[in-house]
Amino acid sequence: MEEPSRKQQTLQDLKKLVLSKASIVYILSDEEDRVETLLKELSATFQPGPKLFIWNPFYGLTGEEETIENSKAPFDALDRVIQRTEQAFYLFEGIHSLMDGDPLLTRKMKDVHRALRNRYATLFIVAPVLVVPEELRRDMVIYELPMPDDSEVERILNSVISGTPHAAKLTESLTPDLKEHMVKAALGLSLDQVARAFRSALIGRTTLDASVIDGVIEEKGQLIRKSGILTLITNRPTLDEIGGLENLKDWLRKRSGVLSKEGKTFGLQLPKGVLITGVSGCGKSLCAKVFASFWQVPLLHLDMARLYDGTMGEPEKALQIALQTAETVAPSVLWIDEIEAGISVQSQKAGGGSQSRVFASFLTWMQEKKNFVFIAATANVIELLPPEVLRKGRFDQIFFVTLPNAQERKSILSIHLKRNGADLSNINLNMLIKVTEGFNGAEIEQAVYGAMVDAFNDGRPLTEHDIIIAVGNIIPLSTTMKEEIGRMERWAYNRAILASKN
Ligand SMILES: Nc1ncnc2c1ncn2[C@@H]1O[C@H](COP(=O)(O)OP(=O)(O)OP(=O)(O)O)[C@@H](O)[C@H]1O
Ligand SMILES: [Mg+2]
Image (cartoon, rainbow, N blue to C red; front, side):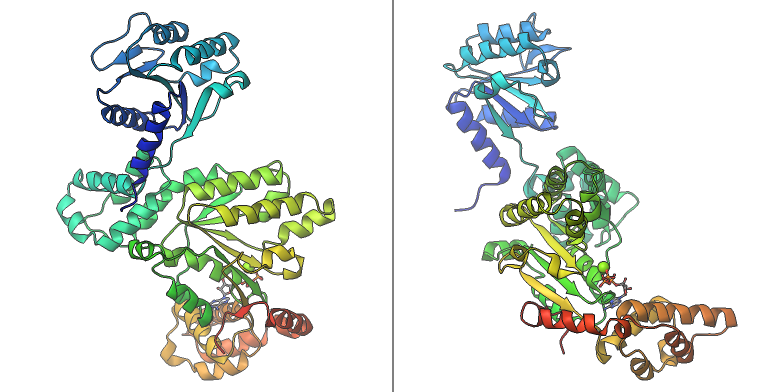
């Protein structure tokens, strides 16, 4: 049997509540339009369908065929609800802010509960935040409206496209694959936001290609910024900007289909996340970011240092908000750079306590999260991490990156040379591999850049000699950190897999 869509599931949930004679249902959502439509559809599933009345303070209780007299003031409206006897749904919009701190209105709500609990009439409240006085908690059911699902988002995409002047050409260039990605990119937004995201992404376009997805993702930036410690990174490196590290790349390539419909039907489990550790400047952060471009999902950066520095209040609370936000924009990649950073700061401060609680709640969330939020974490001082972080089954894989070998240096060199617009046919890469032995990726990048500056100042094209000179001016980390690197490699030997193929 096919799984019900999320919308059908929502209708079923609400129907159950009505059938069980729930008197007051508090729907948490900022989408009043959507809730109105849902209740209309819900009513249509009954025979005969209950009438739907919508209340707001300016119009009072308004139904399709009648407006109930004398129902603008909230007290009057609730009285009308208590007095009427027909099967009905009453949807109250905007009453939550009036209820806050008004004991009389709270009292009236209790009367509504008592009047409705034995009748087929339900009072719905729709509000973006939960404002329920303690004494009403037991009398109402709180229902969190899930965000629109694939099918709803796809419907909006179709309608937005058909409303543009280039509808035919746009539709022609919309491959099924691209369509799926666009829909995925808009998941986690409310219906209004979805429509806005598609409209703004389509502005000025007559055909569609993969670049449209970033436009859709942009709309999520707003949501993400609200959380305080998350940022949306729009500049996501792609797989071909990483030299070497083929094991890690293979791991990722093998998982290209995890988000696809086919993968889901097949029963593929979604990966949870990876931890990347190793030598500085060898591409840990670079790799962490690549997952997002590969799966074409938003890249969120969680600022660990900010989490602990107190500007966002209690770290535990701030983390919870951030993780919830990450889930609402799922599918997404959550990049946590130097995951141990907070620990060192915190242990200097207070010695334990809060940081272990923060980690514990993070790990629990990682285990239980329902939506696809892939964790791409990096760690520099892996010894600082509590052992439970490293336990098997938490992360799908722990990768270790170390100094690039000759082959890898060759591809790192050519990536950075090309990026700087150098003509590769004039440059002897094999010679450069030799002089850059012991260099990490960051140092190779620095050498190429230094050489470019010199060549530019001399007013001639770049040659390998410029690079050799630039290389000579850099003392690689590996000479000063030999022991440290050795220690890391020993640690990694039976705990992690190499990101490189050797
Ligand atoms: N394998 C690589 N291929 C291409 N460029 C690389 C590679 N490794 C490093 N670089 C270059 O070096 C820069 C720094 O790398 P990155 O920030 O990923 O290192 P890191 O391992 O996170 O270092 P740190 O421990 O200092 O945070 C990258 O932005 C990139 O330009
Ligand atoms: Mg880094």
